[in-house]
Image 1 (cartoon, rainbow, N blue to C red):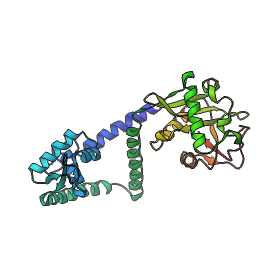
Image 2 (image 1 turned 90 degrees about the vertical axis):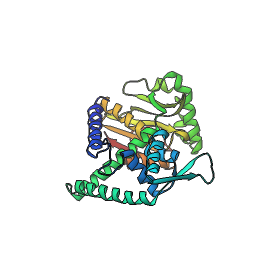
Image 3 (image 1 turned 180 degrees about the vertical axis):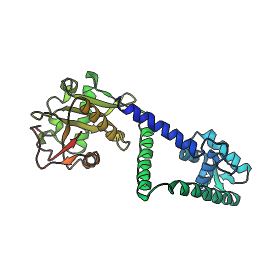
Image 4 (image 1 turned 90 degrees about the horizontal axis):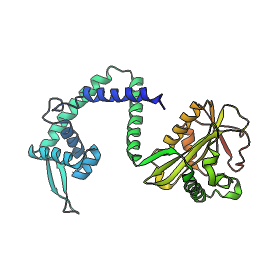
Length: 306
């Protein structure tokens, strides 16, 4: 994990520099009589009418900050508010004709700024930056969604909970014990012992004291330098938040540190979401399985170079 620190520090420094260079710390947004928060608020209500709560959510700021920005816009006749049609306890804020005129100037100013910036780059570089920023933004949003979740190493106290997660998810997808899936493993109720061996580890995901998912790494028998990604299961409430990718990356970091060169897994076409994730992470399909895992019903073997 220490290898990530320099990259994290550099990214923080670069993010700060970009914010400063774009004038986001200035009292005024360019040469217009708006602070950055007010300018962003004007952008949003210029697209659609919003309540203060909705605006705060879009700008990722607290309601009091959004309320102050709107008050300034209303005082300058750049916006006006009216009672919500269905909820008289809140107001809806809309842009005024004067606000639209200022927003048009703001658009010209920002378009000129970014045109000058992009003039320094080739089309390929511009596309690379756009893709990187999309990934960065996605990571930011996922980190927010994951704020109440904790990834930690499993302990003996987690054995019953993670076994139940595996049984519940297996039943959800029709992965019954008689077909040779993980749910049939005789060690399912004592995973902390199984993953206490050298080169193995299991992690659980916990939310407000409840175990909602997990995954583990263990050596693949008779295949030196190859580990296996095992028993990766998530309850419905833990899905759609990027936790599977984060947990998989945690597994890969451990595997590299343990000296593994490749990571193997076996899955089934029934687990469509998992299959897409593995392909996105860089796993390649194999023509035949490696070793003898005992999971005969998992018809899709995959391998990743670490």
